[in-house]
Amino acid sequence: MDRTPNSPAPPSPGGIFWTFFRISAVTIGGGYAMVPVIGREVTAKGWLEEKEFYDLFALAQSFPGPIALNTALIVGRRTAGIAGFCLALAGILVPPFASVLVVALLLDGFGDLAPVRGFLGGAAAVIPGLVGALLWRMSKTRTWTVWRGVCTICAAAAIISFRPWAIPLFFASVLVALVGEARS
Amino acid sequence: MNLLRLSWVFFKIGIAAYGGGWTIVGIIKTEILGRGWITEAGFSDLVAISQVTPGPVALNAATLVGYRLAGIPGAAAATLSVVAFPILSILAATSLLARLGKARGVLQEALKTGTIALVAMTLWTFLPAAVSSWTSGILAAGAFVLAAFTKTHPLFIILGAGGIGLVLSLLVP
Image (cartoon, rainbow over all chains, first blue to last red; front, side, top):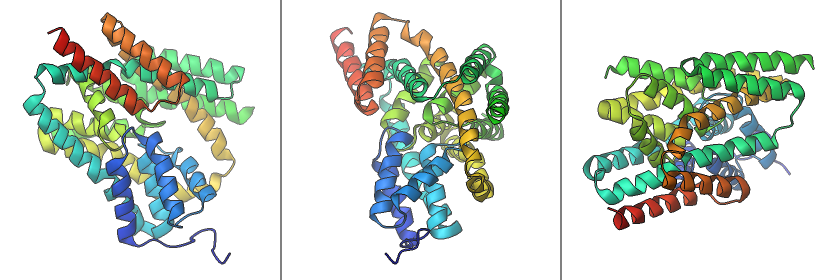
């Protein structure tokens, strides 16, 4: 074991770009589908050890933004400095941007055809179910205390009632929750 | 559509974009529909497409909404604006937050309160669509059961429901 925990095998700049480009281009289903793939790739390549990767993933969740992007940025920076950060950014951003534009252009052409409308209607119909399931899973896996329960219900009620203020109310509720957590 | 206004709205969305795609979709929906920039049905289509194209859903949704509102310049502006704050904060504060150590657990616990509330809001805004017709209701309920209680990948749920919608549109013109 002659590897240091911080940089087992420094990646090449091209390696960083292509790794994240490839993952972003082929992984469908959003951040929580992409993160395990990123983890497998970077540990297989020996850029990071698995525990270190999941520490960085936990760190990525403290920042706003798409979780896959944040994880890639932090991994890029940790393994290859600012250059790694920029290359990870480009690698993650370019494929979805290009593919989404292609799909949008196709829809401009074929979006009014009945089968396309039918497909989109069906695909859109499951959204409430998927969001409900996410809410269910988030609630089930959280360790609840009375304070957390009251805080979360009040936050949800406030944000739902005053939706144009969702962003300030989000931060207000995080702040209140933070004060409560720090005191307990 | 004024590109500066579009960028500002997406920059703001990026600041509160905690907790993954669905919270961001919820905020985009509130901000964009609240301004009357896009219709309810049009937005649901865009979200469905975001789910089945590669890449983070939140980014895809931002790119698509930007494209709908102001073409390719709009797509670029929305995408770059929504990631601007996350990028800057990661650049500025990674080492700071890494040093927080155990205190970060407290921060993340507090963030959970906010993100669960935002997901609840997202659900709330999509619920009227679920009760708009029998087909939508059944598809939504089926998706909930599969996604909440089985390990089915969301992609298959979306593609499956899309397939059902396609077949229905051919059978019942």
